[in-house]
Image (cartoon, rainbow over all chains, first blue to last red; front, top):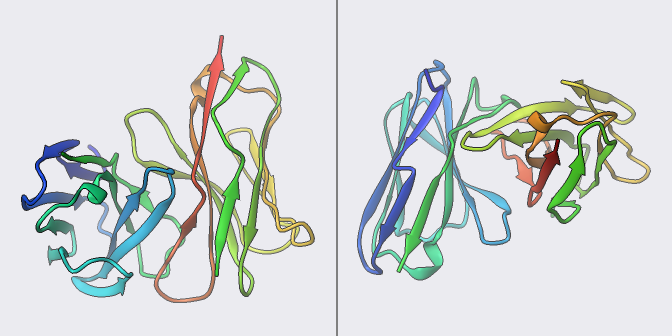
Length: 113
Length: 113
């Protein structure tokens, strides 16, 4: 069983479309994250939720909206996709908000054409 | 601000060679330091960590020592195996509260038999 699973693995779409990436963790963790890996391979945090509450919200366009229906799920919805949104998006979780050990999903490669 | 710089990849070695992947950091305060590894097709996973100066983290034959004087946390392994082929990420976190890991850009390592 995959601990942190995200879908889809690959997403190819046109500019202007709206798309969602889903993430689920079966570890019983309280905290979940979204990271973006840019073209230079740097991983940067976007959002973090603890028990369904937003606790980290980095400088991200408001076209990106995370949604956490329960503490095992953290989905990422992106409106009006732009070329610059092309990247690999990683979901992660940790036992608590201060937990140092993060468990990552295998990533979603988003390509905006 | 806080940042992590890793040696550029890709790195290609033969089996049983000695490995060093350099990592230096800039941080305000006293960071904890980490190495994460991403095997093909999988998410990142914590490899080792060190939380204070002169600490040595170790796991699976890999080691890294927290050097405050040189602000470094280089990853080493005495004899690499083909199964060590992966992307390695150096990271730091500073302070309490919500986890906000700052990652380097990753170094792709390929081990040839």
